[in-house]
Image 1 (cartoon, rainbow, N blue to C red):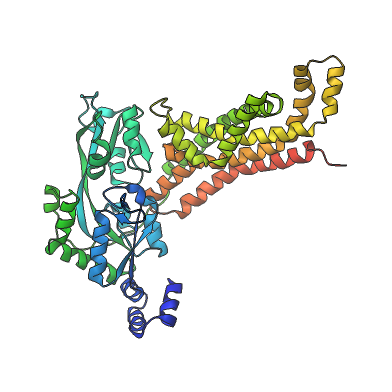
Image 2: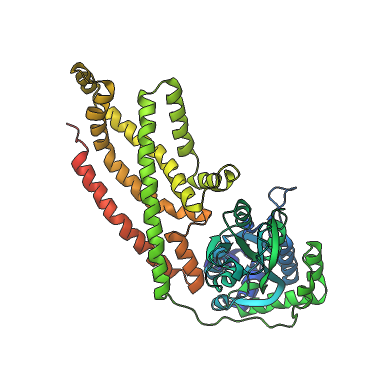
Amino acid sequence: MAAMTLVVLLLGTPAARDALARAGDDGLGRVRASGTLRWGGDLQGGEPYVFQDPDAPGRIVGFEVEIADALARRLGVRPVFVQNDWQLLIPALERGDIDVVLNGLEVTEPRRQRVAFTRPYYAFAATLVVRRDRPEVHELADLRGRRVGTLGGSLSHDFVAAVPGLDVVLYEGTQEPYLDLEEGRLDGVVLDNIIADRYGLVRPALRDAGVVGEGVYAIGVSPAEPALLHAVDEALGAMEREGELRSILERWKLWDARQAGLTSTASPATPAAGGSLTPAEFELFLRATGVTVVISVLSMALAVAGGLVLSLMRRYGGGALRIAAGGYVELFRGTPVLLQLYVLYYGLAPVIAFDAFTAAVVGLGLNYAAYEAELYRAGLEAVPAGQTEAALALGMSRGQALGRIVLPQALRVALPGIANDFIALLKDTSLVSVITVVELTKQMTITAVYVQSWLVPGLLCAALYLALSYPLARLARRLERRLVPVPA
């Protein structure tokens, strides 16, 4: 913000400098002086909110894009979309990266603690979707003891969490929970009716099981910028009175009886006090730490075994085995582990539907096996060929020479590197949250949204990772000093 102010003061027109001077630190003056309204959203939310135009790559469309365009026009500025993760939109607003949040931001009491809301622009219903082969399910209470998916940090999450006995599974995207529901990895999904209509109920195997709650979307503005809040709220009110908002909603087939009941004279909502970390959240952190450790240990065990097999195939196998092992190593080292997790969990679901925990262990294990194979290969090459020849001359078979002479020395060389990779794997478990596993980092984001603060949960998460990785780092250094031979 300071840099923008300096640019306007040095290079802006006299009118822009006067507007900025009159406004002081208020956001409305900054917006008008810069000539842009930066609105934050997440393209992952998809249609009909804000998404890439399939007919014009690089262009974004959606009903909220049209709302942002109309608001900016009424403020006399140009709209600028700023991509951000949906759960990080409020922190982005607080940092000054955006001027307003306009992306399905539900009005909730916890959010009022940090954000000033305009009047609502859309009313929605949280809809329960289940499979058609479950005709006995009519409400959330019918799914006690079952897995129910929803978006983390959403009002739908609050509705699901309020029903005791449900196994809540959190997602970051809008399409993935319905894919899991269709594959039988979930028993129900609760999301806004906009999402349910477009991503869930279009699937023949799924049905609408009823409304579990209602809410509204509103535009979020920093509470430190009351003039901007008032201006955006007035512009939104004018859109309602003149029928422009209804036209936008009708164009996107979103107008229904709930919208007619919205109060166009509602005053902006102002923020209240913040929350704090409780012992219950700390207990959840410890539980997530346990999940992280278990996934790390099992994945590393798979990687160590797989890497050993790959290294032996590349060094001692025939032509076909060498090519296959080399191709595996290049494939898994040359593509992102996040992509591999998506393909394993979602892409292969029609063939083999792994549960999330199994997919996490297998995905990380397969990826790290490629790296362990290279460590073993270096270890095998460090053993002089003369030792193998001597073992064969003493009457050992090639397998005996490998098992008794070569591999023990190769493992001795590779062991420090394996310990270092285990530390890296421990931190890479944070990626498995994309397939709904609640490990340490995911628990941090859930808690941060709940308590409306990222500092304390972030510091606690970092401390727990450090408590896990520091002893391993010390062990790796000690192994390196003791086991790796020093060149003469």
